[in-house]
Length: 112
Length: 112
Image 1 (cartoon, helix red, strand yellow):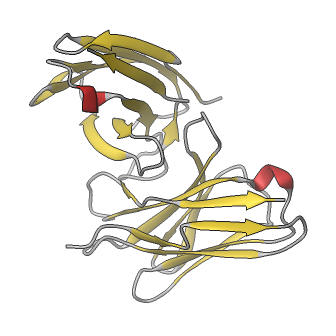
Image 2 (cartoon, rainbow over the protein chains, first blue to last red; image 1 turned 60 degrees about the vertical axis):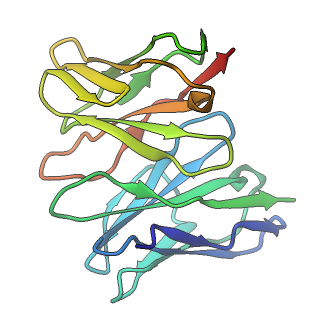
C-alpha cells in the first residue's frame, strides 16, 4: 500500500521563475493539504483541497495556487519565486471521514 | 491568534524516560496531534488526543488538558532511533480533520 508520494524530490530555481510540485495521496484518502516547512521550523499550512476545490487557505499570497484532480492527486504552483520561498514543501493526505494526516517526504525547493 | 509552544531542544539517555511539553492557544480546538520527524524525512503520526487524559501506545503516551491548553508526549525506554524532532500540532476547526497548526518542534537527542 503506497503512502503519500511527492515529486520531484529536489528542485533548484531562480528568482521570478514558476514551479509546480506534485502529490499523490495515500490509497483511500480524498483530501490533500500542502505545508511549507522552513529549516528548523514546524510546517505552515498553505491550503487544503477536497472534491477538487480549495476548502481552506492559510496566510500565503496568491502566488501560491493549487489544483486537485479527479483521482485526488494534487499540484502546488508557485509563481514569481522569491528567495524566501526556499523551503521543504510537504503534502499530506487524509480521509475526510476521519483519521490523521499522512505526510509525504516533501520537495526541497531552493531559490537562487 | 494561534500559538503553539514547545521546547526547542532536549537531551536524554538511552533507556530513560523523557517528557516533551506543548502549550497551545488557538481560536478553536478539534484535537491535538504529535508527529515524529527524522532529519530529511516526512513527519510520521504518533498520537491524537481530543478528550482530556492519557492515550498510551506502546512506548509512547500522550496527555491532554484542554482547560490548561497543555499536552505532553512521554517516551519510555528511549532508543537511539528516537533521536528526532517531535512536532505538536492542533486542529483548530470543528467538523473533522482539517488544517493543522504546528509548533516549531522539539529536537530530541538520545545519547548512550
